[in-house]
Image (cartoon, rainbow, N blue to C red; front, side, top):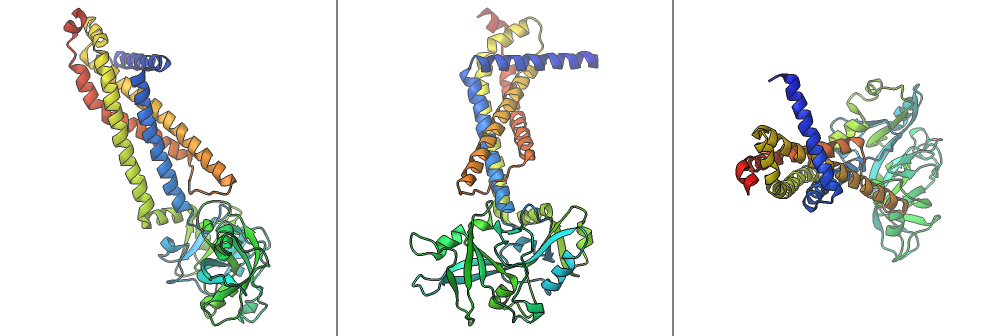
Length: 415
């Protein structure tokens, strides 16, 4: 058979399949709507779970969208957020000073993570555990774990060139969750509230400088406070080595990761993508969620297509018998069924992607009202959903084609 004729026949069958599907949709055929709806629900659920899984990973970094690189101890990418033990970077104050002096580096701050028991001073309220992040505030606006640091005095006064006997500011920016956790029942601490640190031999505490709303899901939704680095080092025993868990670096785009490789001899410099990939590999839950969602989507979508399209195939037996009677081959009739099945799956995939976008809009609206949900929206997810929908159509093809080829043409026409 001439290849041009073969391609033309395929185009004709594909056009006929699309036209038949369009007619059924316009006529609101129940079985067709069920087929499209089944695939759409499967794809929408898949993308929602995938977005939540990705959001759980992306939300666990203390950096923001302005952070370009994370400098971490070798092999510690999986604990780049809440590591309170293990390997740490040393002499971070002078290293950060050298970093910020480099051309192209717009901002850099070390981050030390500690867990302290804090409670309002001169109060009977029981101290509560709070994740405390020690940072080196810059002169520009900066966010760590979604919390702004511009309410803290620039620099690190208590560090005093490594003597750790400078001015204790005691300033703390706390999240709304931390303010509620530290407050009395049904209330929250207010700006200006003095906080004592329980379980330490030091008398110094903190004062709530401001209560901030986090700018997205992640660690900022936990009871979190941001303080000066040296003050947290003093309370957690990190003054001897001037330690931190990581250094966040922001650039103007002219600095490559390789340019920062020599900052520490045994450290890794990761971009956001590399950090999130490492986090996903070391955190089994998000990956398991996404994999389970894929399996469920394929199974549910396939069952819907095989069942609903199968009924349509049986109902159209007379139509295919007429095609057979006028000389349309069995292969062409099976191709027509395959085309309708794939077209149905594709339309279902498009509807599912649309439902996912609606869910993303709802999540964004919830964020406006203060309820943050870990939900990552990426354009590639939409393409992923469409590919899965077409994959569902391919998986459903064999039983549908078998059913269609069992039509006895002459009997159906004469019946």
